[in-house]
Amino acid sequence: MRFLMWLILAVLVIFALRKKAQTFSSSAQPMPDNQAAAPQQTQASSTDSSAETMLCCQYCQLYIPASEAVLRGEKVFCCAAHADQV
Image (cartoon, rainbow, N blue to C red; front, side, top):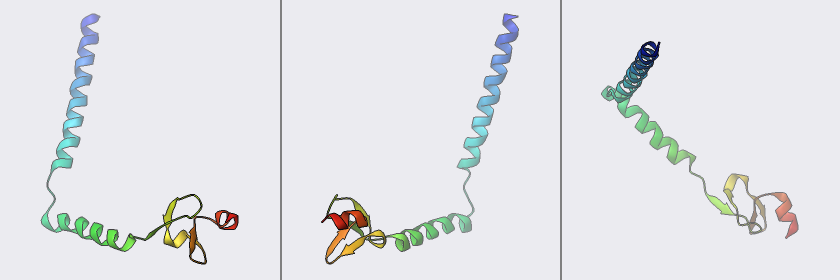
C-alpha cells in the first residue's frame, strides 16, 4: 500500500514537471520577425498618445489627470467638493 502511494505521488510530480516544461518552452519560442515588431510599435504609439498632464489638487495635494480636474480660476481641484471648500 505504501509503495502504491509513492508511485502515485511520483507520477503526479512527473506530470506536473512536464506541464511546467511545456508552458515554459511555448513561451520561450521566438516569434517570426513580422510578429515580433508589431507589438513593440503599438506599445510605443499607445504610450505616447495616452500620456496626459497630471495636475495637483490645491486642497488635498492629490495628482489627477488634467481631463478630470475641476478648475476654479487658476486653481486646480480633484472634485467640486474640494473646490467649494476653498
